[in-house]
Image (tube, rainbow over all chains, first blue to last red; front, side, top):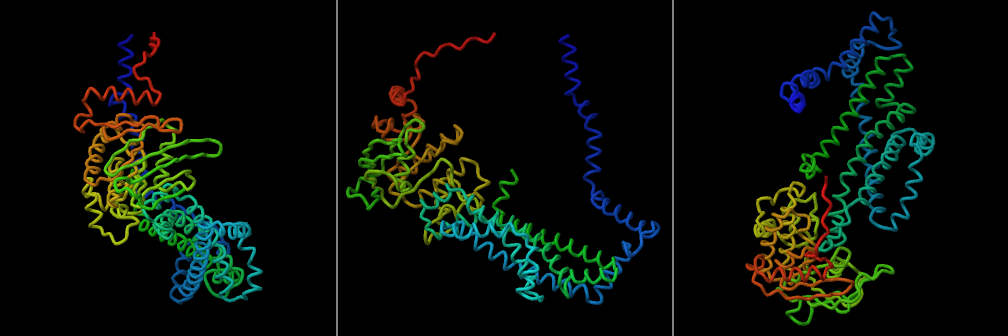
Amino acid sequence: MAATALRSREVVVGPGAARSRARPVAALRRVGSSRWLVVAGPLLLLGVWELATTVGGVAPQTLASPATVASTAWDLTKSGELPDALVVSLRRVAIGLLLGVSAGTVLAVLSGLFPVGERLIDPLVQMFRTMPALALVPLFILWFGIDERPKVLLVAFAVAFPIYVNTYGGIRGVDGRLVEAGRVFGLGRWGLIRHVVLPGALPSWLVGLRFSLGIAWIVLVAAEQINATSGIGALMTNAQNLLQTDVILVGLLVYSALGLASDRLVRALERRTLSWRQGLQSL
Amino acid sequence: MATGPAVALSTTAAVLDGYGRRFGDRTVIEHVDLDLREAEVVALLGASGSGKSTLLRALAGLDPEAEGIVEAPPERAVVFQDHRLLPWRRVWRNVIIGLRGRTRDDAIRALDEVGIAARADAWPGTLSGGESQRVALARAFIREPRLLLLDEPFGALDALTRIRMHALLRALCDRHRPATLLVTHDVDEAIVLADRVLVLADGRITTDLRIDLSAGRRRTDPGVADLRARLLSQLGVQEDAVQPEPPLEP
């Protein structure tokens, strides 16, 4: 009996058993890791889309075909309409981000470092944070008119909060033992901020920046569609009035490409500034 | 708390006079008088919660609520149990943190002394526990401290690394000759490293022993066993007491 028990255990742990059980898993894994699978999903979607709009009877006013979208994108690029709109939208996001991120960072540093700042700033920020930025559109139009200012300021307003919340949390989360060690080794107030607190809060700041970039595009889309004569959103709103689904789809694709690109940008920034974490991550 | 102008006697580096510490209603340290002399390694033993780290923090200038007279020179350095290196600064920058006008070369010289100059450009997150404590030692000794405070510096290291670090610390102290206070709960570590061993219990120093054995004999001398037993009993541990036999597992 002991012998059979031993043998049966041998079967389980033996190399043959392991191999035969691993084979379908390995096959699946091989298929899963192959590169073409990554594009298979989108290609499938594109095929269904093309079929639906050519032989499937979906009207172009409902959904333009992929081929039409591609040629429209090309036409819009050649005519300069798309590049112009892109530049306008990018500029709005860039200025809005610059303002909002700066304001959020400064406020977070003030309330993270100084008790007075905390009592003064934090309740105010928390109060405004619950306000949906898009609800401010009518007020911003009344205050700032219909030119660039309300759009840029709306972006700035919306992106300041994720930066503030994350940076503030990051500063508060800095390891007190490191601050204590810094003090023992001769760092003054400014030295502690520069060498300990700010670098310690940087990872959280970058998380905030990522949120901010995402929000910036959302807010811009809304602002441009409600009231604009230029920019990607305006392009799409005009297309809506003319039932040009192809132009709308081009706008959507551009927005998603921009979102993707800005996320990549933050990732690259993270890799550069947080290289000290590489050692930890590789463990 | 009166932290310090340099102490009058040149051989005395730091003084506690009627030092005490209360946390709310709880008195952790009742009354301690203590002189730390230059080039002397003093080990402070105590059970956990005895207040030995609290005493060290007072000497480090990290406790504004210490009572009594605490005099310590401004040239002091601390090695903590956790290395406390800034993870976002390279090793060599950690060594010279807070020092003005020091260069990478200075840092490398200090790192060389603890045998780890090759890791000068590494991120602290990539170091092992022993390597991190070597860097922490370099960061302390580059300041040429008159008072060196060690708060269970090897407590988190494995036994083999700890033995190597003991030899390194002894060599560094012999060369730089700071007044050294080593806080530990490890009796053997205290005997191996210290010239003088104190036991802190019930808020007072209950034992103050000088160890006259040469460093080479400390691990083997028959007197050590006796010393060890005495210190352990001061800490409330009866090592040789007959333990009841555990019941045998069927």
